[in-house]
Length: 213
Image (tube, rainbow, N blue to C red):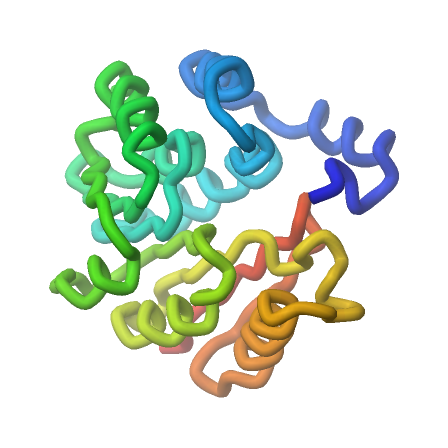
């Protein structure tokens, strides 16, 4: 994925004019860059502070993250949740889980987070939760499956946030199966009478979806 889909100077300006993440999350970024492959998978400040702000507005008691990586987005969401909130994170990379858990253990919000190893679709089927908030950022081939299943589990007024919905701009000229799936997911959301959404050109695209009351 290219680092910038908008003018690099504009991206830098937006970054600098956004509230900084807590020091622990800044350390998590540094350690991810030093020790993990594909560090660009980390959400970063603009997406992370957006997730924190949305979470703080919704105050979710029950939340779900599909695709946790090293825990930056999970801690951002948990930061906005009430103290008795529960965030279930689905992840298939054992090394990423171990890395993230080390930061969860040091965070005042880490007790809200429960990590489940395994395929997200299998995990979701076993969950008995009425969801207030979901962040989807895992394998793109299942984006539409994730969205449709999560929507069923989401309470009226709940949010579903999907990352990477611009897919480096490939949604404009799809050439692969994954490109087509993302195009179809975006189209399905835009035409879904059960929800309202705003498609943000933030980083690699963020689709914020609210299930109607």
